[in-house]
Image (cartoon, rainbow, N blue to C red):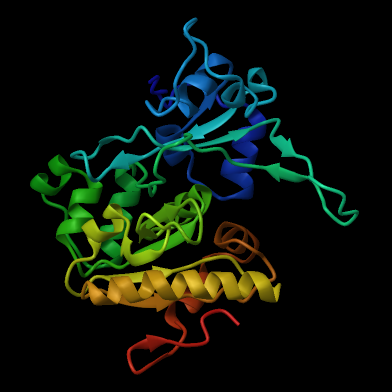
Length: 306
């Protein structure tokens, strides 16, 4: 599989999206985001051995059809792998400049086409994003929590240092741009690709759920007393709120069983994502939201978002 380097050129539109609209530090962008186009898109998104190529070496048509105009390119982001000694993670996220559109099926006149904004490697388990962090951000985070960086700390890297310091809370958000924005503002943050991606359901041969367990990356950091702060989007649709609450409750309960602590940060809106919130309102309102986590009763989270 081709692994892109962060020196591959991003367009001015990409930099506007990442640096201005999402408030991501320029050095953090350079370390984690890169441009990807053409066959590299297919090679990256279809690298799973579960995808069988044709005798000619080409990908099957169903895989080729997933990207309608890959030559237009887009940005790619991947981080470091806590399960592989913090080497570059092969899994990541691709945001095409021309996204594919899934047309509605059937005869429902109210059905709408669905635009797929983000793509991830096919037939591969989803992961979490642990972005590369520049030194000046690392130093700001250490100062925030009253810690001094030793030469040993600097030698092992940012994320092993976070792991060795369970007093440092970890913010969990949905979407890599939001985690990048939080890191840019001096908070340790990891990103899930979706609200239900913090855990996996273990099923039997009849597809019945036997149990649920944390994804290995979260389990790796779920050490005694570690505080996880979930900061998902501001929502107004009741159906979405219910879905977020259900998935947050499952992930939170699994973390609590692992002896970690959990808090829920409620964004007041009207901005939807935490990156939009920070860009629109500044750091001070975010600090206020973090200081006012939602309540718990009898060890359980209540009134998560609604």
